[in-house]
Length: 66
Image (cartoon, rainbow, N blue to C red):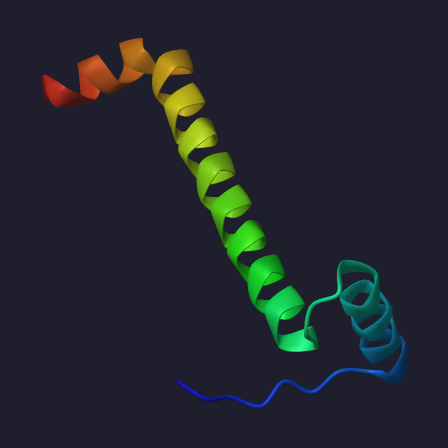
């Protein structure tokens, strides 16, 4: 699926420099960054939900009994 990504000059410069360092296209670097970001956010969400479940297990059990 195609999309347009508007970047500031600073963002474009950073992306260009990173792509050059990695000998990859800007598109490849941007796509990898998106996948890394979404994976990290999903792991963080899952970890927080598990922590909430552990820390509030007693309250959740009482609510289930209502």
